[in-house]
Structure formats: C-alpha cells, structure tokens
Length: 379
Image (tube, rainbow, N blue to C red; front, side, top):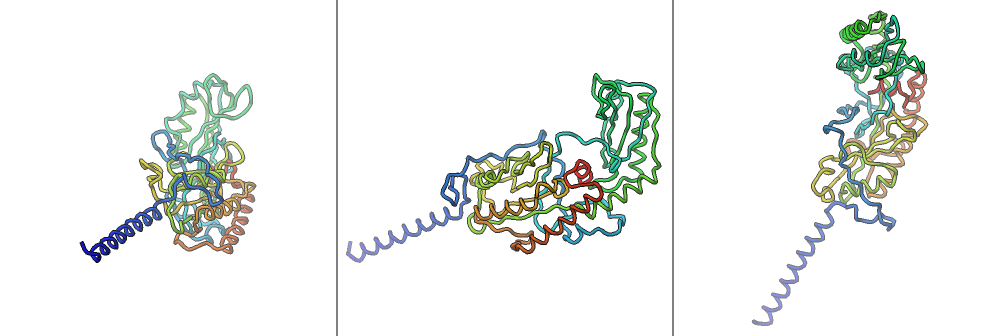
C-alpha cells in the first residue's frame, strides 16, 4: 500500500470518527434534561418525585373542565347584571390555563346567599338513621348540588345527617348557580319533588319559597359570577434543551410544590388546612406515565391560578409571578402567553391591578375569594 493510500485511509478514519462524535454530541444535546443533573448553582437537586398519583377509578377531580379563554376586559367588568349565555364558564386571560383545584376537606353548609333553602318542619325529633334511609339516591338536581341538613339535639349545630344522632330540625337546599349556569324552572321543580319525597318519608311539612323569585335570584347571582370568574395561567417554554418530568418536579419541589392527584400535576398547598391549592403546575400526563419518564421530552409546562378559590391574603398572583420567574431562570425557560409571546412586566402589572378590582367586587358581595361560598359558586 502506497503512502498516499495510507494517508487517505487515515483521513477517512478521522472524518468518520468526527461524524460519529458529532452525532453523539448532537443527540446528547437534544435529549431532555433529567433529574440527575445539577442545578445552575452547582448543588445537587433533591430526589425526584414520581408524579403518578391517581384518583380512585382514574377520575378527574372537579374543576378539570375544558378551558375557555375570553379577554381580560370581560373578567373584571362590574356592569349591569344581564342574563348570561349558558352554561357559564370561567373567564380567563389569554394565556395557558390548566385548572386544578382540590375540594376542601369539609363540605360547606347551606347558605342563603347561594342556596335555595326549604325548611322541613318536623312533628318531633327524628333519628339520623331514619333520615339517611330517606335521602334520595343522588345529591344532584340537574346540574346543581342538592343537600339536606339537620340540627342536632345535642349540639344545636346544623350538619349532614349521621347515624346514631337525633335531630329536631331539618332543611333541604339546592345551589342557585354554578359554572353550569343558573338554577332554572325544571331544576327547581325537581328540587321540590326530591324535598317533598324526603318530607313525606320522615313526616315533615316542607315550606317551599316562591319559584319565580328564586329563579330570578339565581339568574342575578349567575350574572354577577359570570363577570367575576377568573382563572390565570402562564406557559413556561424551554429555550433550548427540553426537560424531563423529573427535572421539572425537582425544580418545582424547591419552590414548595408537591405531587398532585393526577399524573403530570403538582400543586402549591395553601397555608390553611382544607384550603384550595394556591397554584398548580401541569405538563403532559403521558410523559409522566411513560415507562421511562426521564426519557420523555417536555417543551413547555403550565402554571395556573384559580383566582376565586384562593384567599387574597395568600397573595397568589405575586407568588405566581415569583414561581414562574424562578422556574424560568433555573430551567432556562421563558414565560409566555398562549400564543408563545413573552409576557412583559408591564402586562403582568396590569393583570395584578385588575385582580385587585376583582377582589374588591367579590368582597362587596360577601363572596370573598377563597371563602366557602365562592368555592361553591365558582365550581
């Protein structure tokens, strides 16, 4: 073999090795960042949490409805209470929304502000066992929650009937409005039928309010709620390398987020037990459920706030901005709107100012954000 042939063989080998090395480098660069990587400060990240928790039967928690995204100006207007289109859906700013709200530990009681309440006059005390046996099979009237409460002889408190207890007063109620719309004539009639059947079973006399007045009250409440129902969301997009689920979870955990009840969801818990989460973070659930989640590539995640479910005192929007900025900085991402356009500081400031007006309007109607009444109305 001549010197020229040897030289060409060596050059060919070097070129081939270079191509192989380049392809290996390119593959590694495009792979998602994993939980084993270190933080930008050089410290080891905490152990990854597997986001695979599910509800019994694989059901979605309430509040996971399909998102609808009108403009911010429609959220915070406080004008005439015109009858809205049905069903009612929460208004949101035009940024990505992923609504995750866990129900409170204790079911709120009936409230005249948001419920039709019918006293069921008893001839004498009745046992909790008898009441439980007489309750209807479903706790819904159309799309509205139906509830029965009894006043305990021993404590004087109103509560859901319990076995082994005795009660001397009874009432039934149906919610005036929720995100499905206002209570209508058909639903009110169904409420009357259910309450009457319960009353007949326990020997009580119902005292129903006027249907026209209650349906009108339901429409007025729903109109107010439609103009003051807000959900906010930011999208965090990767600038260069994609993220693995574990990588996202580790950085979110550093900010106080914990695994949610569904795959690909984390929540920032409230400071009070039974309170809805302050914020939620979500990403592709299929990536979280993959056989090897660390090989799943995420290009974006969503950070969302259910405004009416979180008390103003938690400063949820301030914390949302801080969390988004911290995650974007730590994971080399950018905060954008739903169209992929970066959100400016001025835009966020304007949203925050508008939210203060929304909080004031809710407070003036005794429906403060995060209250039991607000969580039920905006559900």
